[in-house]
Length: 94
Image 1 (cartoon, rainbow, N blue to C red):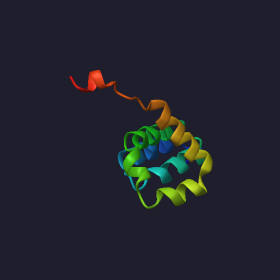
Image 2: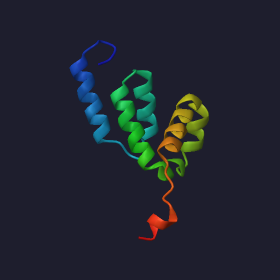
Image 3: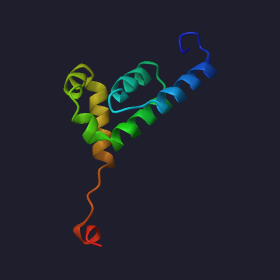
Image 4: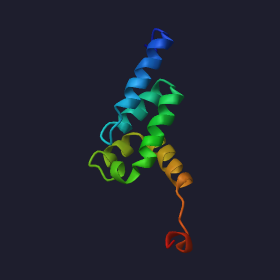
């Protein structure tokens, strides 16, 4: 769809991909979004990944994917660190 500049088809494909995101496929969707400069899809995949970082990074595929996709890996880790917050003990006890 991107190759032939059919934006409505690109949008439908993005909506479908977001609805089908899983821990197993989110990194590949992230690659696809980056390769096609689809910022909306990339943002959705990043949010999904950030919310499930422990599961994704604990998967058997993560290490190999990270080595092959260093730029995206750095973006993902940066986003996770940026969105990471430590809850003060006084709040956590309430």
